[in-house]
Length: 226
Ligand SMILES: [Zn+2]
Image 1: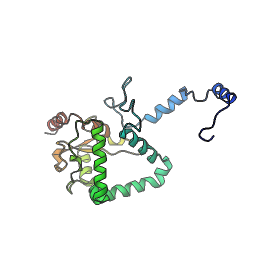
Image 2: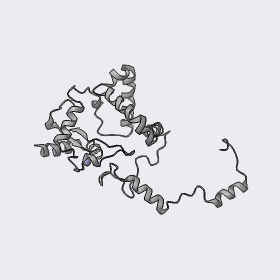
Image 3: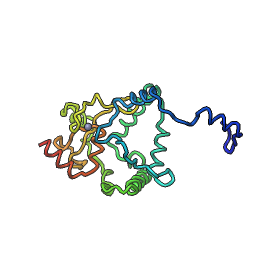
């Protein structure tokens, strides 16, 4: 790689131009590969990217939007090979999530860092103009009954199917191909209300949708459960 500031000679430029480098062509093989990669990913007709849809980050750069900056940072941090994930990452992530289970940010990182995190999240949501931001309600401490055992019981009760799109848990995968468990959703959005009648299994893409028009979803699920 030439150093920054290196100037190509005009001859060089011509040969690059003629070689077709930099012109990205999606051949049939590439298309096939890309479509195979999409199989099993958590996408539904309701949430998938539609033709002509404008992305939320259109016109934004990492210097003008905190959300874009953070998503870029996250990607570069989490880019690891599948082999790495199988041999090391899986165990590490399991250990981390076990250790974090049922704990608040404050107990995990100390008050100072927890406050910093809350501030960042508040900034992010207020920046995107999210009408659903409820003044940090998501940071309220969950009572102890909220644990993996309870969540697994709810999934079991719901036959390990998303209760909105009815896809089976075994069909759900992360981008890296790892199986993805069903989320357990609080129907009334109160994280302290862990009664089984208030809990329902949802896949990731259906769960994300419940962040919008909360009242409608609450009514909808309440009618379904009763
Ligand atoms: Zn679903």
